[in-house]
Amino acid sequence: MLITLTSDMGLEDYYVAAIKGAIYNQLPDVKVVDISHDIPPFDIVHASFVLKNTFKEFPKNTIHIIGVDAEKNETNKHLIVKNYDQYFIGADNGIFSLIFDKKPDGIWNINRNTESENYSFPTKDIFVSIACHLARGGLPAVVGNEIQDIKSKQLFRPIVDMNSIKGMVGYIDKYGNLITNISKKIFNEVGKGKAFKIFLTKSEYSIEKIHQNYNEVVEGERIAIFGSGDFLEIAINKGVKGSGGGASQLFGISINDIITIEFKD
Image (tube, rainbow, N blue to C red; front, side, top):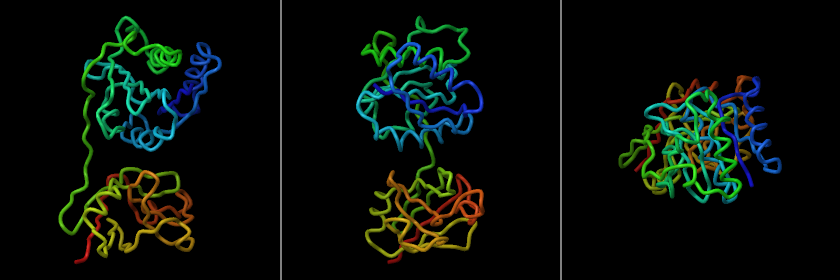
């Protein structure tokens, strides 16, 4: 059985170690996988992007603990969500609607009698016990009441017309690559094989070809590619953020900046 951890806690403090200790204390033989602990604090958009691009690689019945903006309040319930034959445990702060492309197969509001109002570390004190219950083969209905909906959070969606797509940068990875919200599906539907030009906001540079892999251009050259998640990425081959070589630095582009594709008739 696998339990994954995604959090904004970093590794400098004791928090992640405490979570793992709590898991192993209950299930010494379980496998714990760290997806990321470098999520910016409370950034559910960043966390959803990371999870969206990783969870489908895990086997059925994997249990994902999400420790980002995990505090419970009047509007953010603690939920167990089942989708794609996997379980997700976290706060209903909108993150589940950002991770999934379809309605969940099951949603359970964690029972109040499994919690305590005094718990200030819900990822460890609540989510771990729920994850271990599921890992033992326990049913969600034993620790939660089934409900019908998750909180919906809407992000900026690409603006499309007959000859253009206007999207935005939603994520910048450690290499400085710009990952947009323009999917390969939308690109193909609008472009229909026509020539095009990708315009980078705040930059005089443009790109007129989609490549299949980075080695199709020389080192230091700009490149557009559809990544493993099938979203358009703008990068510098062998460029590295922090050394002046990443696309985000060279083009002066940040998260939420606009990327425009214009197709030629």
